[in-house]
Amino acid sequence: MIRHVAVIAALLLGAPLLPPRPAAAPSPMPDPRYSAADVVGIILDALQHNDTPTPDHGIATTFAFASPENQRATGPLERFTLLVKNPQYRPMLGFRRARRDPITVSGGRARQRVVIIDADGHEVVYVFELSRQESGTYARCWMTDGVLRVGTPDLPPGVTTT
Image 1 (cartoon, rainbow, N blue to C red):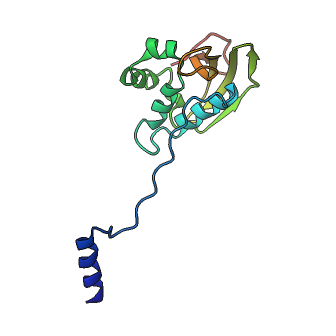
Image 2 (image 1 turned 45 degrees about the vertical axis):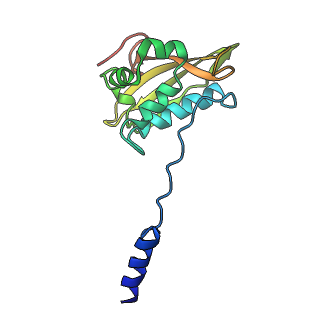
Image 3 (image 1 turned 30 degrees about the horizontal axis):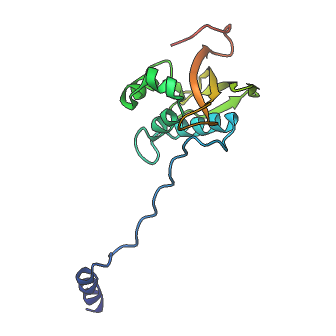
């Protein structure tokens, strides 16, 4: 009886019956405080957990870190999503683990080779190319200009597989 009264009182007063759900942490966005290596790590984490907290959230985060020139070439987000889901980049979604070579930074450009172990256990190699933006909304932020699939570790550079 007392429980029923509490529920009725809560409804009349507009109080929630259940405690509020914690809000999902906001997605990282380009920031001058992130190094080029940080950006690659953010993207890898986003793609590994692509559907958390919502479907294709990782792809959206990846698109947010694409340079303005890259976004013009690959966007809007719906088109970018289809590109990431094609056979060339699909191994990055939900991959098991990644092995990152040391990043090379020269001035405002950076490159990092990453070996992905995909969900099926296959190794696929990508090279992340980044640039530090010089002006605009993202001045001084590292952003991706491209991610190139360059093959598997046992194939010569430049050879791709499907």
